[in-house]
Image 1 (tube, helix red, strand yellow):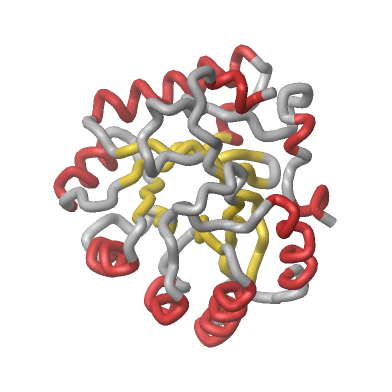
Image 2: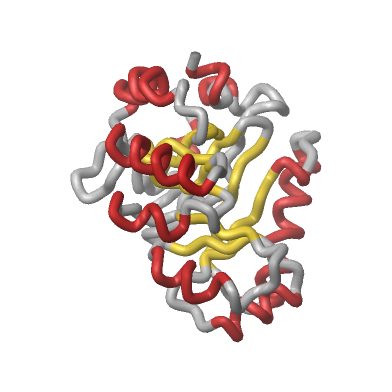
Length: 220
């Protein structure tokens, strides 16, 4: 069942159809950066910088994909716009950004009507169940589903709005006490519990690798 829902992470370095990491994966990485594996693709989450950085990041993705004979269209660059003013988001939009990541429900609600309609909003932060109803019909994906109760709430609110919500299952692969997420061994039973929810579409995993001196240690 897991292989039907998410890429086989054990084969990620050997097949062009599986997820590859583009983040730095070491202790110098920003605390809130993460990578996500999705069916037929992956998400690269980067903090929103200036327009030049947006273009540079996209170029880096294209070059990395070329090295492994992968379609750059399979990789989604998400500009993390949390705490940033709308004016900065508009500059990034002008530079080509169309996918923005927020970690607070209120910021999505506040910015939603101030940005063009073709913007996709991703909820990348911890999501409280009592706030699901405010964004369930506004976000293109929720990255942080880590409990049955939260999944049940998303299903309930999505049904009310008649929408299907793509989600990522948050996995605490480093098993850090300060981080949210399921333990790796909990993932498959969790998927089995929510796979039948008609208003939730499981797209993959959101993981944060352990902090290490050598990034290659996380790729072994």
